[in-house]
Image (cartoon, rainbow, N blue to C red; front, side):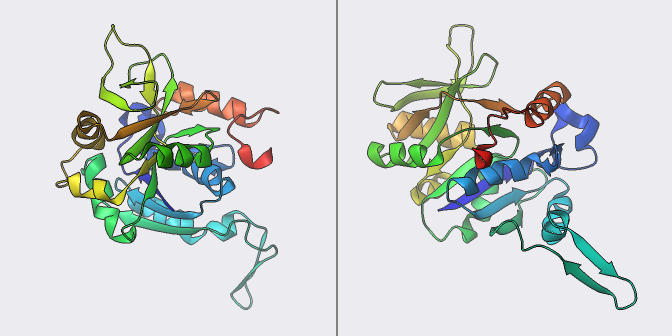
Amino acid sequence: MKVVILAGGLGTRISEESYLKPKPMIEIGNYPILVHIMRIYATNGFNDFVVCAGYKQQVIKEYFAHFNMYTNDVQFDFATGDRHLFNAPKFDWKVTVVDTGNNTQTGGRILRASKYLNDEPFLLTYGDAVGDVDINAVIECHKKSGKLATITVYNFGQSKGVVDMKKNGQVNAFREKSDLDGDLINIGFMVIEPAVLGMIENDESILEKHVLQKLAKMGQLNAYVHKGFWQCMDTMNEKKKLEDLYISDNCPWKVWKK
């Protein structure tokens, strides 16, 4: 399965850094958070990525153009102009970076990238959050459900899209949080069947509003409940929290070290 990562938004709530680069390229420790997300998937066996870029998309392309140099020791011979990497590449990834436009909505970005998805089920997530999600468990949950899409949900007390679900995992509704709701939220780490692409109309289509809500009404949206760690990076305070965890001895999403 290919992994589609939404990485094209403006990141206005973390503008202290996003005025220079896309939010997914803001670094946590040694790597952009985008790479942390990719390492989570790669550790679970998925290393073919389609990055839906937009705002400052050239930053993402330039980073991956030099990725092996950034992640290895390198020697520059100024007399000959040669460059030598001392180590074998650390990552056996394939990364397709797609310019999906500056102002395209989340669903529209997926639609623009669909020509690289080979009409097969794909994995989908957001480019600004990490967690110790068992990707293969999500896929197994999706297969058992027989639904067109599966989202991963998490109990997190803040105002994000709320999921109302049955005990068997079927989602009854997907909506904005209200004071009457609990706090099961959609955290990404989704599995999407190719038929869902036909429900995306154009650049203005919002995944969460026009696609997931429609799937819920159709009884075609499943949910996998994640009970481990998850954290988004919307603000500088959240970035600091993730940085502190990353340099600690117990970084919960660093599944590649466990």
